[in-house]
Length: 254
Image (cartoon, rainbow, N blue to C red; front, side, top):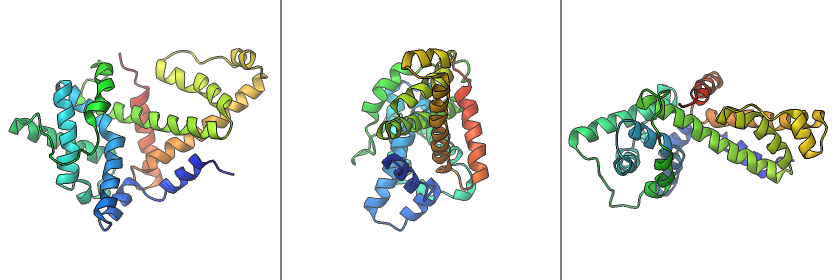
């Protein structure tokens, strides 16, 4: 029987972001607002990091990030006019963000606040982000910073769902093995924990360790591809987008 996390994942696959946005055009204002709120919460980090990489200080980047979602996404109906035929959702969002940043700079409005309820609390969520933001030689352009943060944010979301699903399925040990063998090396650039070490530590045979890790790795790959499918319109594009994101993800910052 599938876990609740897997069931939710299946429901989410009924629409890409493009089709969800398209459907929201004919829905109630509350429904449309909910769709846009969800997109903002998912993608504020790459927006914020792009602005920081362009040279904006933390406070100004927060204001511009807030302004982008409130003024452009909601006020100018950015996604309501989105054409899914343009291709990847990631590229479309970045294109609109670059235009917004240029316009804001020309009008010298680094600080803009909406009188309405904000889409999300940029100030609260950016507190920790500012402490972690460090320009890297491996990210020579703001666009590189945007793409890498998009990739890392996607990975964070997938790992959160994976960990929750494993816990609900009684696979905590499986997830621990997977994380030590695959995720920690990829993120931190350290050697994977050996099968033999994990076997001794967990009281399992090496074969059990290998099988447990592979079980979760299969789940991880499925969830990752499911997440990418939300941002493109066909299977071939999804696999190409995943490969592109993995390139940004494995390009370790200096």
